[in-house]
Length: 296
Image (cartoon, rainbow, N blue to C red):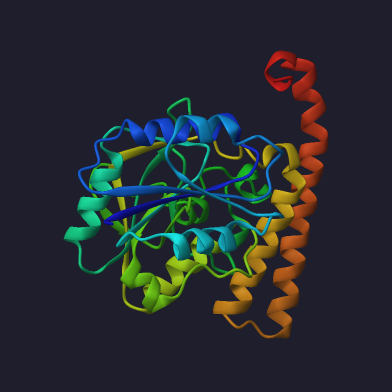
């Protein structure tokens, strides 16, 4: 088996169906398999997928988190190459083969990822630089980025000025779609299961760099990502999980002293507080101004 495609699913029945449909329409020139690891979705929510596709489905009795579910899929897979794909993504016809060809060509590649866009075609900042004690407070939804939208720290952190026409090395890429090698996983380790949801991709790419592998971004390989199809209903859990994951990342890789750890915790706490207030204030406004779009 050359390629294993692993999808971690949680209550995204329709999106998962569309994702697998896009895979089956892809031009893949090697033997491949699709493995769906389901994190205790609603009863019978996978019936449509089961009836339509010849795939392997691993069903968990509880939600074990993204990283652990990915590892389950890897353990059950047979491919020399592992493609991770979110259930709320759709791949273009040639994307998978482009990624596979590129990672085969680049012997120093630890993982390779495509350009990721929202459904409206707008580019997602899916290839970024590693967080630092400064950059971590200039993220996509941070207060500082909102106040100073084009500041150089945000632009650097989100890699907004990188070349979007040619393949290039970046620090890390989103786990919504990336391809890696089994031999690489065996060397650097699988995904760290201490990250329940979010930041496990940052950690994985950081470990790749520590083992002198490179992370490549391929802008002409395209994937559409709805971003948060399974998490938008419980946005507060996502906010908490992301910031907890970021704290664990700093604790694991940067070994902060007590003072830095306290300042980091305080800063992340204030960011969580800001995001909670932002959602509480803006959600009623959205429902008032855009009642149709928020009732779906």
